[in-house]
Image (cartoon, rainbow, N blue to C red):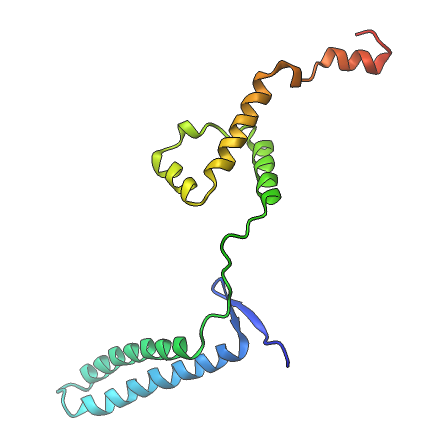
Length: 159
């Protein structure tokens, strides 16, 4: 069986044949309701301009009806998978953020809403662990690079 051709439209991925069929359905339903309303309203409304204006409003409702029909015919194709997390990717992002900004900052400095969102997204512990690691790294003098000692070892022993 041939794989469907997928296209990106307004930030969403769609099946090409479903897109074409949806456009046809939308055009037929919206234009059909417009012309039907225009034909029916000419006999009821005194002004033909007002009948046309009301028919245009009915045509807009036809657009919505076409959208509902297409939504029922063509269900979403994407699979949303929650719970699959790549911890190495998250750690790499934290390293990149730290390299870019110098520090991640402190969780205590964040507003309560942001902390609640981090907890909801299960990211709070990740940032807390990174903060602890960063605090240990900056406060432990043994992890700091001694520039003089490094120069001495490179130049043969004397700084």
